[in-house]
Image (cartoon, rainbow, N blue to C red; front, top):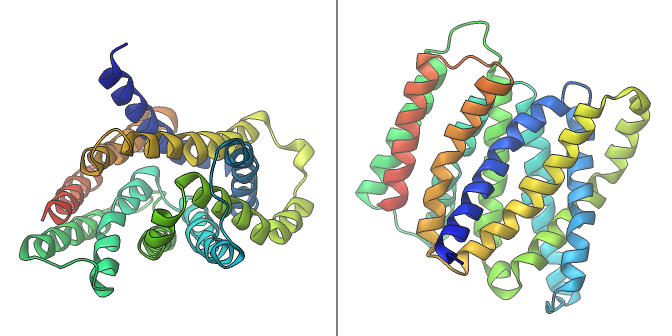
Length: 288
């Protein structure tokens, strides 16, 4: 068996699963409210992670460690997913994917504020270029597009929450396995959103929801939330983190292409130009 070929195939699948998350979200939001979809996705992902967690030989965290992981889960999963899905309901796939692509820069800034990273001139220049790309994206967007300031702001808040989760959860990730961290995060997030999920479900006629939105919600819970992260951590054990992270630049490209092909979203010159500038800035900031 060609192990490198298998590994790279898995990584490409991971990127495809994450890119498809934007499309599935748009389809599910046609008939499900953002809060209901967020609660369903997180809750189902938590249930799917439990068998993986209990079947693996993982050290169980003590009560204090469990509480810390739960708090991180509320930040990195609950708020992240609520903001992401609310934002996705009011913006385009391309905009959402590019804004999520800014996450490495937010992680770098937060890590620098905590004294964990140093901001070099090249990193600062990359950040400035990325921000200019976002400016191009917003300033020259024609009227009548599905992207709004409201939606883009909420997607940015989702990215910010995940950056906080990444920086403040680094110690916990080193102390416990990735399976433990993700399981507690999803289960804790699902429980935190359970009252809202039940309330939102009571306001919807779920029996009349079509098969498409249900399948899209299941996809969001299984493939990008569970399988993609398991592939990610598997790849990290066989490849340098920088090489795995390099594939993340394909996500906005794949997501935008899927948005055009499947959802028939328009991809104008401002999106293409802003996207290229933004991704260039993120690349320079990460490599600085």
